[in-house]
Image 1 (cartoon, rainbow, N blue to C red):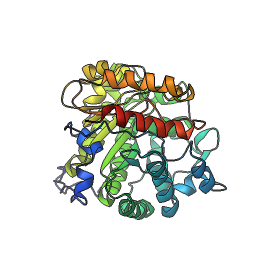
Image 2: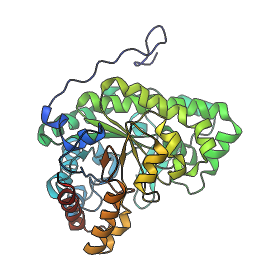
Image 3: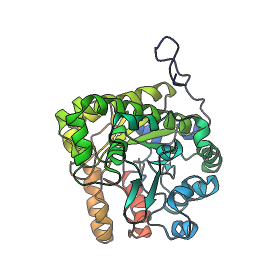
Length: 364
């Protein structure tokens, strides 16, 4: 029986995590997540932990990506680097969405220039047996690293994260990154029962991974459904929504904000908002006022500067950033972010200037 299940099969009541730091709870980021008045629009960047920072490349030199995710000292340093440099309003835990799959014994590696590669793709019902439950002991390094981080971060919130079941399933079935998702979609359309069982199993693994992070001290969590934009809305509702909902429901009792994000998901914003998140992220393809209309009331919006704008020079960055702020002006809660992750060749100083610009322009 799963550690998250009760003997009767009912979902047990979860005791909310204790408030470890009143300053964190009253931070601009968490207040925006709760759609409360903020002193300025909070800013953080997806993939801010690493990627473009020279200090990141220095500490990672000679260390494989997955190995670096399992070293609490290195995770702590990399997570803190953008907070020190950019003065962002939240840190995001340095990891990778395939870490929980590696932790339960899936033979995979992150190949430089390629991404996650799975040695034996999941294609049959027999392959489901390889996806066992995730336990806290499997990822003890996460608990240790988050403990170190929360002590260092002070009043800055820490965001935990995980990959959504659809995106994890895509990697597992395809065996690596894909542009067409032909094998994943073939299973979804051709063997819907196996597909549903696979996503349900991945929802349990994902929820367990998020619980470890929250119980260790994460102040919010984000579910990355990076590849959900490959789906039509009807297929998302029929074949994916239930598994993401299961993840969000599993952590609802902790009382921490839950964020949902996918790339190319403008047509999916409404069904994605129904999965249970408190904050919905939009990429750069949809203006934030329109994104909020699609999402509906009662949720904060996160986004959504095109990451490539950061290569265009300071004036262009500020012009486009102001467009984002103007589009978000009437929203209850807005968290400024990029419409996807920081690109590797981004000038780190451009990010620092962007944070300062948003803070200055929105100071209340």
